[in-house]
Image (tube, rainbow over all chains, first blue to last red; front, side, top):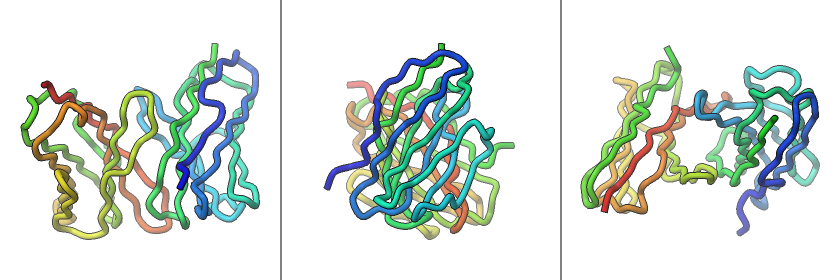
Length: 112
Length: 110
């Protein structure tokens, strides 16, 4: 069974731009969570989607948003990028909400 | 105080050593505990998960949970250079999001 895939793997943007990241979960998994990972803050939870509904949201500003499609694929959008948004963005999928999560390889975003 | 604390390391051990990685937490509502391994520039990989206090063994890995002390451990026996990675503990209470520790960097020297 294929694992979680994330595209693109690497991105370079400039301040003020917006970016959309994509995540395809493991087949049969209906829950997708997004995390931001930085050396200083570690893994921080952004939000979780289950059956196209946002179930939980972390403490991030409204510039960070997401959505999930009927095929469980998910996208994450960051608007008005700031230098501090440079990070590894990880997507994790699970069969159901709040079940064991399996991570993708991440999208490394650099904001200049 | 952070909800989950973990010694960031780095921890260096010789090949074949027994490694002990530890996390402490403050939220007594946590019921579900996991350990992930993350190689450089890769996503975290699930190693072990457990719902209960006590020990759970899988090959060279043993996860230990002590809910009364709010303390979890991961033991690696006969450590190998391929075990060199960052180890993350994670925990949750059903219905809430997962909380991760900051990770411990482990180097196993040949």
